[in-house]
Amino acid sequence: MPSLSETTIIPSPAAQVWPLLRDPALVASCIPGATLAPDQGDGLWRGSVRVKFGPTVAVFRGEASLAFDDAARTCTIEGRGIDGRGASRALASGVVKVSGSDTTELAIDGSFSVSGPLETFANAGGIHVARALLAEFSANMARKIAEQSPSLLPETVSPDGVAALAEPLPSTAPSAPPTPAPAAEISGFRILWRAFLSWLRGK
Image (cartoon, rainbow, N blue to C red; front, side, top):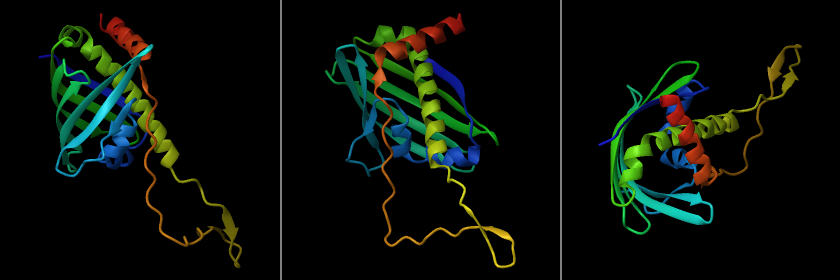
């Protein structure tokens, strides 16, 4: 059973990153080609990942259970999936840990197994593909954080001449939080190229 132990850096404070990682919808929006299914709520998170290899499109569907430890800033994941044709199945488990202060170190330790036609490919190159996906996820998460950072409010001058931040105008009606925009679809060639670079670095 192949194992995975990888770290990536997100250039934002851990206190800012951890709450976002507790939001499965936002996390899914940072995984290229991933979408969450609408039937959530029974303790399992269901979704799919769409991968495009030139004119060929493959869809992998799966579900995962998540257990969060806010004190340790860790998340334990147990997941399983199946490809669109039902020929290959995958099992995965692992722990995601957030650490750091001004910048975030995201560490993933786990293992996975694949049966069916994709088994040989997963055993030989699955780790390198996982590294490539982790790099994509990290970049997308950093982008989300930058987009959500509040802009500075304009300054006003009080009657005594002291500068102060202007108060935001009250909202006339409550609004629902926006649904995170999904990350760009995975390009199989781009992911394989990243995986190839990962393989070269590991040699």
